[in-house]
Amino acid sequence: MNLVFLGPPGAGKGTMAVRVAEHFSIPHISTGDIFRANIKGETELGKKVKAILDAGNLVPDELTIDLVRDRLTKPDAQNGYILDGFPRTIPQADALAGFSTVTKALNFVLVDEEVVKRLSGRRVHPGSGRTYHVLFSPPKVADTDDVTGEPLVIRPDDQEDAIRNRLEVYRKQTEPLIEYYQSKNLLVDIDSSPAPDAVFKTVLNALS
Ligand code: AMP
Image (cartoon, rainbow, N blue to C red; front, side, top):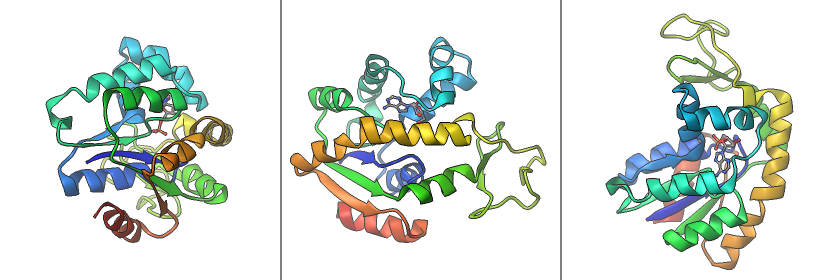
């Protein structure tokens, strides 16, 4: 099962990808996570892409395509995969079609107002990557990690300006992929507004 997860930032693609990956024992491949790990590790790639991610812009296609093409050759991806956050442009989708066959594209649908609410409330513990939400899953003590007691931060790309930019980038560059996969009869819309357990059920139904 070769899956692509589409949808605006904050629609819960990552949360669902973790659960679906576990359910079907296939890898969850998030290009955003790969870039963030490289930034944290201060690799050459990380240094190249840090400012791009901080502003909420897209990493150049060639770089991203090479990274995914390489990742999909790994043994764990031979029986299926979930691509979360890739493709994000038509050239990326065309490139993917050249080196793999997508089985289904799930489109996680959420209105802008809800996207902004979800992203602007997100808080992260930089050491562990643990995430909280000021409304939906607050830490025991405000702005403090439950486990270490260390301060939580707002991801640079979750700052208000960057959120607005990410949404604009999504509309312009990524939304055309909805039609792209629709025309290939691969698209399934998933309403992302309910609580995670309910969304997960919808996803499993869509994949059965
Ligand atoms: P995400 O965690 O999927 O929201 O991705 C975080 C950031 O990583 C994005 O705002 C982009 O800067 C970069 N990124 C992730 N996936 C891609 C992609 N497929 N193409 C270009 N940039 C990407």
